[in-house]
Image (cartoon, rainbow, N blue to C red; front, side, top):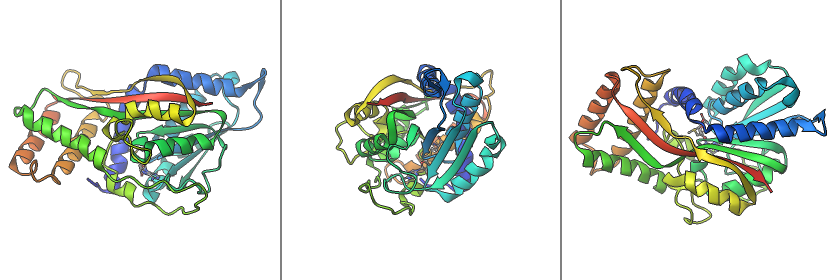
Length: 336
Ligand SMILES: C[S@@+](CC[C@H](N)C(=O)[O-])C[C@H]1O[C@@H](n2cnc3c(N)ncnc32)[C@H](O)[C@@H]1O
């Protein structure tokens, strides 16, 4: 289901604090250790900038998050200069990313720029082999053919560079308390996963192609919140479907990475005494809208039952009684 760009941007913004609370602490800590290590060259601070690529940057949430993490590291332990490039195929998202990064842009030693690019076009200008010390990918690897994309990302990393791949959906979405027609809701959620398994992914062009034009595919899928891909073994051209989380570990090992850390980053949204924190209520409304939007395209699910489900679940959000659990996986992989 496609939603208006401005709503998609707002969805991504509501997702930031949810992701902040959900990102796996051990995997993040392993990442910060790597950044610290890169900053220290035989006791002297590294002269070259620490180069980061954030793929599928959207409104630049991970760029801002990373900038915050690095700027809070003790000065003697962080790279003195950091250059982050955020890439996305959606020009509107990049405008938002620029605008929202502005307040941090002046942070000492930290630069970010946002570039329009298609991740399925490996030869594009930002995709210089061996050019990055770190690649971040938050809620995006489900949108690409997994094995080829991971292999391509490895080629963009400098020796011993790291891939921090986070919020990779892994096949479980649960709404609590159960809906009055449990079987119907189970069918809705199963269909939601199947739409991730069945969606058309962009072909990965061979390295060397210089086409920077948008794929046109991302826009059609932009409402899908996080991860997907498919069970490992769906073939090199396939995504991980609704099980990108578990498929990803195999994909990074096959591509020539070592696994440095892996753990779950489940979204667990719940009201405390009837009140949701931050903008979680809006976030829940977006998730319900996405499930509803996908179900509208299925004749067996659409109709009065669907509208009743949608109304009743939104009322549960308004009343502050709906919980959401979504299973996801984070990992940090090091280029061998
Ligand atoms: C679910 S959003 C995640 C955005 C951001 N990483 C975040 O966590 O807020 C996925 C992003 O990937 C981008 N995207 C999807 N396919 C792409 C492609 N082939 N090339 C470039 N960007 C793509 C979409 O435009 C979208 O901004």
